[in-house]
Length: 146
Image 1 (cartoon, helix red, strand yellow):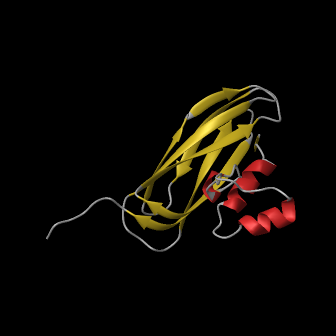
Image 2: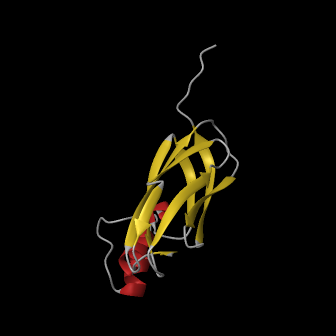
Image 3: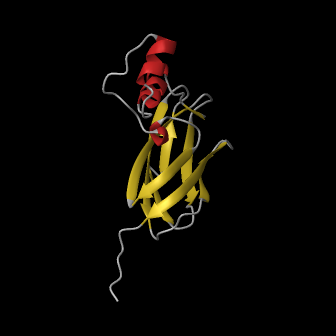
């Protein structure tokens, strides 16, 4: 099992979303940026990094089974100051098939230091996939009145 690769168009959209990059992208690729852009955390990479978690964020990942049929249980440890919810928490995936994972991050406290966690996919045939998590700035919605 592995995370399906990010395609060329996704990387191009990501590069186009960087401020002032349109002329550089056009110069090196010959393609115009237009209005499309993608956030770095939305690239289908084998890790998830959120530089600024403003209350909550949902991220998608797609995994592909490169082995035989298998059932996976999903577990995770959340970065400090963040709650994480992954769905589905259990799935069957046939060889060669893809599975979407939805990962919801919620800031539980304000913090400006990096914290780390992971998502683990544990197959009943013994395969294990780890997806590292990192969140840097966390902005919680909870406000206390004194």
